[in-house]
Image (tube, rainbow, N blue to C red; front, top):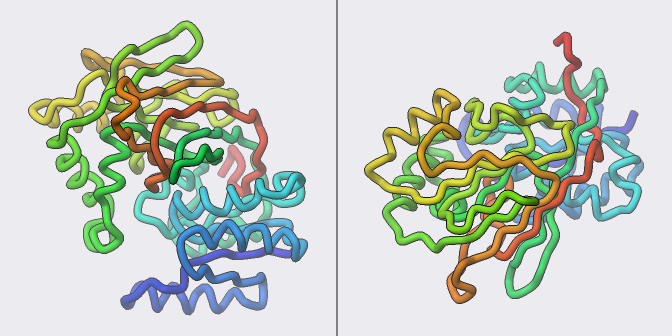
Length: 304
C-alpha cells in the first residue's frame, strides 16, 4: 500500500528537529512530500494521487488537513482513489480528536499503517477571496465574524509560543473591535443579524471542547452556533459555556443544523471575514453545502 506523507519542513527548535528525525525514519515506508509554502500541500496531495498513493497523510494541524483535502478533491476520482491519513502535529488538532486519533506521533502512525477506514461527510463553502468566488471543502470546522477575525490576528509565532492560548488572546482582541454584522439562513431558520457563527462537522471546536452536542460526522448536516451579539463584558460567560458545552443555552445564541446555509453581510460595503479549519480564508457572502459520506479517513474503529 503506497502512502504519501505531506509535511512542513520549515519548523524550528528542538521539538521540530526531533519531529523531522521521526519523519525521516518513515522514508522507507512512504513517499515524503515536504511543502514549500502556503497552499503547496494542495499541489502535493494531487501529486501523491498521480504517484498512485492509496493513503495521503496530512502531517500537521487542521489547516494542513484542509489543504490536503482540497488538493485531493481537485481530481474527479481523488476521494475514491485514496483515503486521508492524519498525523496530528498542529496546535489544536480538532479533526484528530474528533476521530479519536492519538495525538502522539508513534501511535498515530500505527493507526495509519493499520489502514482501518471511516467514511465521513465533507462540508463545502463557496466564499469570496481576492475578488473571486472560490469553493473550498472544510473537513472539521469554520467560522464567520469575530471567530474568523481572531484567526486573522493569530500569527505563527504566537501559536508556537502560546499554543491554544494564542486563540484565546486573539479572541479578546477581536471582541474589542467593531464587528460587521451578517444574516444567516438555513431552510426556514433565519437569524437576521449576528456577529459570530461557529460551524462544525463534528462535536468539537477549538480543541477538546464539545461545542456542538448534536453533531455527527455522518448525518449530512453542518452544525452552527450563531451569536447575535458579542460583548466583551460577557467573556467569562462565553468561556464557561464553551468549557461546559452549554453555549446554546445563552441568551441571543442559536443552535442550527442543516445540509445547506447562506450567510450574507448586512452591509455589502463591509468585509466580514471567514475562516476554515482555523485558517483565514476570505469573506462573505458564503454558501455552505454538505457532501454526505464523501471522504474516507484512516481512523480507529468504534472499539479503539
